Length: 371
Image (cartoon, rainbow, N blue to C red; front, top):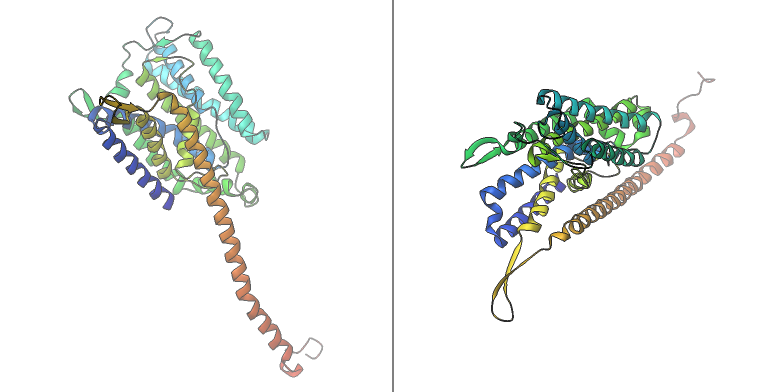
């Protein structure tokens, strides 16, 4: 919980700093939109968190999000290029494709023993090409589809805004189910065991292949759910949707305490990491610093939006470096404690040997022949 507490404090400090810089940061419209963005990122960040905790990696989740939206737009849109089927057909088909793709990746990794990085990298490019082919290199619009109310609607209306957007409710539901599965079930314990020591988990009787495959199915499935949300939020889909989303998800998971070595991480940490990532993203646009130029004219300095990926990349690097430093410190501490315990046990062992050697033969237990 120390890491989660530290990230929560950092999140609060960032929010206060942005509010002082620009009071509109906590305005109703921006707050609701930030909550919506955190929720959509958090849904698929939790999915990739399962994979990372189990010791894997999933670079295809952004393309899964994009393909899900493209399939929904292609199947259900009544606009040009759409097939006009109802949403109750389009959404299940898109989610089914996402789940099947996750299953395929999991089987390639576990049955053929391929590297997760290579498999999911190939999957990322493959799905992006499929999305581009379906969209014809252009854009598929959802028009006035009822699906648009999913992202823009919600509970507790205040003017034209819903104070509790539907993506937030979906995020809370996903978080609750994921937290229960990861922290309170045998399956969750298996995920941690595989990430901590795969060989030991296999020798202890855990069906490593099945559990590891399940994590990729969960990741792709939650990517599909996020794709439904993004389709309703954007309103038009192309192969560009989902590009670099996997980087945001990995950064959110790592910031939340998921170690890229596996075996560590919590759903709460991933939620906090998702919030940090979206606050940083939003803060790049909201941060402002008033100043006077040489002519005494009041001006406002803002961060360059082109810095977005620079900042995100730096955050990922810092998170990985800190994770490695923590791992090194913990390893040295365990070695030091083990050495101290061995040093304390050595005098007792020497004393026991000395007492045994000093005992007269009659005091010792008789051997079999004397009996």
